[in-house]
Length: 455
Image (cartoon, rainbow, N blue to C red):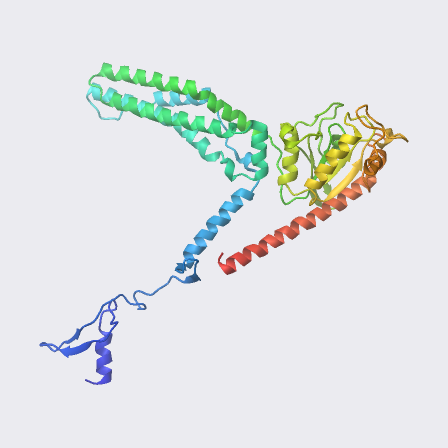
């Protein structure tokens, strides 16, 4: 046999077979060539079964992982990280109907359901109608509840700031508790509805079918009325959360911080479009209030926060914790407001202690100190009866007189220092914008590195 003939004969071997060890070729009785002593395995390469999946190197266990699997895992990780970082989930909450309206609509639609056409037997027709109406009632009640559960986000998937808002506004655990009650109500409605629909379908007479239909309708209605408070609670939760101010993480934000009644709200009115309540009593600000500044075609955010008192975190109320949540979870620049006039109700000594604590805790934030109500300042510092006039703390004595080093003195009433304050705020927010853009650039570089390395 010539070499060309041998190669031609081997080429005729089906592509699903290949020889992997030594073999002998002999000519059979009918002239065919037989191959002896061969192990047959799938090919590593053929025109019909070509390998199309690439491999991305070796993982930690020493096995090769297909690129497509690595990319899918990476996409899932990126998606989960985006869910955690995205903000504004409260504005996407579904509209929740009152429980009374849901029940009324469901009963109305269920009673309009007719038996399947073509059933001549009266008993069969009646039990068919009863089963279909009970099934319709069950679905009309369960589907809205399931929709709410699917569209209200899990707290663990929320941005840390929004997670804090839920805990501090609704109470720790109340959000999950209400969603759990709604889910329990849905399951009970489905279970009871199916049970009574099955019983109605097994009725032996027209009268029995009517009785079981009436009994089933009444039972499902009782269950929904009994658990409907959870739906109404969910409605109130949706209203409360939807009213929360929207914060754009990519827009520079100025956060006003200080003791209660030091003049933060007045400065928010001067600096931005925000119109917070201004009254002469502590904790006027009962939530996070937002305003906006438009300067040189750039948009900035301003937040007014509840005042902080001198006490440990365990003793702080939810209003104070809201302020700390903003500083902890949002990329903000801080405008810290001091009132040394004695008008705010918090002594300068206590303000100094609060200031030092916040300054140390959030030292990585851009910072600007402002002494408000400078028109009320006197030559000698104002001392409360609880303060020690003979205190030898040089730093405290200096603070009582003029505030922190570099603090800007302003008066909203006399418009003293307001022009300079607006200029300083503009510089602060521009610096914050540069910082946010730098962080975005670093994150983009990090993602590219992850894609290149596969980790």
